[in-house]
Image (cartoon, rainbow, N blue to C red; front, side, top):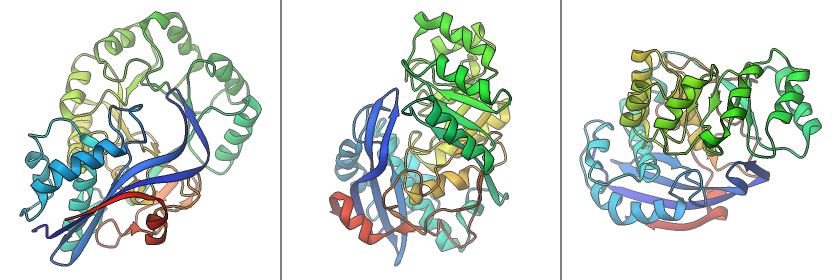
Length: 367
């Protein structure tokens, strides 16, 4: 597979209502979208780093710049036998996983299209369905949250994730557990705490949570290992896992019992598969998370969520949750709430809605 042409877009896509987490409030999701072409066959990839250095040190502008100046010159006219070769090719470029991920996905898309196989089959999954949960950010008040949870569980979502941050903490959990004492719930702290908060963190054991996601610093492993020894609730690492090495070290020192794999944060499909396999080999729980991608990216997440070692309902936002206009086409739809069924056409079987892309693109680059 020789990469003949490349297109790249920086996109800022508005959402229906502010999404509030420990990082703050946002009104849009910022991404880079990549098209690779080989022998007239196109592959598409999306990576959604956000509009500022909050979830990670990267954003859409930095990813666009690094990709234009360093990644595209390495890939254009390059020959690939298999998409996993891209990871090694880009190894000399330190970090910048979000920028790398968009190209990695597009290359997997081309390769699976050329093979005439679905993306699901290309990554080695035999399952047809992905189990998904529902995530709630910080709401106006507890009543609004309870109403939302009631709606989601009544239509079939198997678990609920709650954003958890100063000002939206144990009182919120008290209100939820009063109404839903046995519901499968976990919380996502988005790095909002330190070990100075140990008394509060210990108190979370009484809520019978499935896990506490990323309670401490975004790049920390050591303090998470200390915390896991002091609490009974499993810790799930998210922001701390940017590579296979991070995952291996976290597991070795007991920093977590679950890993939330985000394909963009770890550099793409190839690294996601390696981390998934490691979790299976070590008995570590794993599931897939999203970054606010359009259906172009959520289709990737949904396919990864069908892999055999995924043992917890993943975070894959329904098409109508965030966006005023979804960039991906066709839109990823649930056949029933709480479940996605994978499409079986070659490749990802999704590309941008070009009218939406034209409306919300901020920059473009062609090579």
